[in-house]
Length: 282
Image 1 (tube, one colour):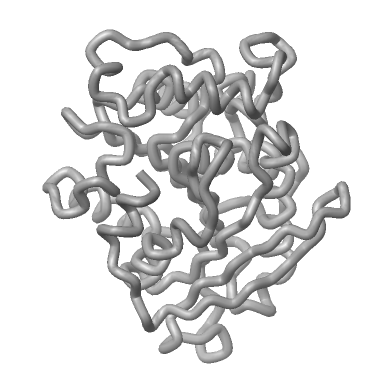
Image 2 (image 1 turned 90 degrees about the horizontal axis):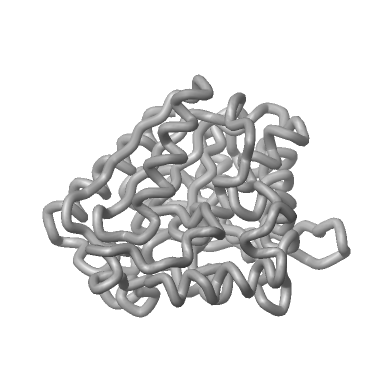
């Protein structure tokens, strides 16, 4: 899927990258890559919204570099800068390290917003697949630790939320680009022997969260033939029940990563436009 993303998404040459760093609680240096159109530098505009982006890869692979073409395309489509965090991957760095790295990056963006031309009250946290799960976990952590101002919105693209979802799903497994076996591998790498037990933190597996109130406005989308579809629908329903303004899209007949594999297909175009609208309405 990552190769498909790089092959099908054009590199936007007008988007510049600048790297920033912060320090995680254990002393590790966390990199945050800023992507911004060179025609609208931070110094030339009023403070703008920003996207804090967390890449996917099943908790075990992926990098900001792999997702750079898609990140640049999003900056091009929206005009909004993206700050993409590099988090350490499992199994070498199990929970809570990945989500803690992400939260450290978010804290940096919030506290340095003025320096990079960002309105700290208009930060959107966004991620795809495992990155969507980490975005949801980071949003929970931001709520619980009192990030101020709070996040404006979370955009979760087919997020990986539930460590107990490891059994093949009839009607989906034959079409799954990320299947139950891969899911078991990813969650076990992140959680080890704790996977499936009561020891799992909601910051690692947000479907475990008991209380979803007080979270930012949420956008979720997923394909009908994605193994995450049921957990994503349930999470959206629980958010709504908790009083969180929530928008959910399920795309008929679509697989995990459908927008990356076939970006010119009608449902992929619809998803791109819906995400663009969600970003621009902050």
